[in-house]
Length: 220
Image 1 (cartoon, rainbow, N blue to C red):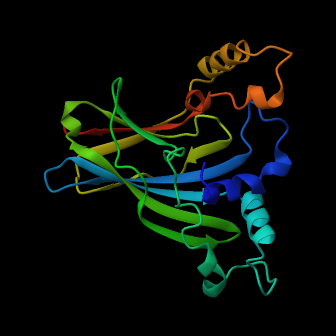
Image 2 (image 1 turned 45 degrees about the vertical axis):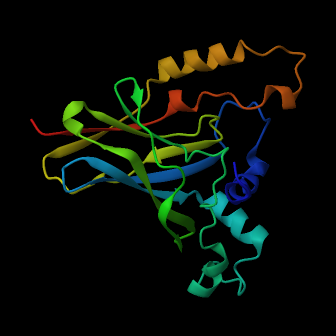
């Protein structure tokens, strides 16, 4: 996690029980737009992150961004927050994955065409993730999945997914299999022993098991 996103994570620290806690501490509503190129291939996905009110409040308060104390951020007050979560390092891969069957499709590293905003008590950002090689959806349904592997952040897909560049595609959101997720959690917990320190335990890498996913199908 880079310094930019670490700032948001630190803002949620007061809700943190232990580093090995098996529940999220930051909540991000997520909107997805599938972008197809002129050849009808999925070329990119525009992702909107809407941060929860507590994380937003603590981030804004701790950073002293609300200069006039009116509980809102003006355009001028938002200026220092432009790109607040877009400075990614090698240790942060964007909490997003596109797959086709068992194949995980390669994405161009880092966010592009980002924006930052504040609305109704929420910090909001958008960015574009481009595929390294655009993919023809006729080769199989595509699964778009926002998730934090360590499950510190929980992403919820909201709104009606937008499809740009094709008119013959449908998108459906699927909830995680909670029974399977609980089994994954139990298996992860079995890896730890009572004599381990909190630093040794770290985060349980179970985020994908609890992730919602958007299944994209086209044609036919």
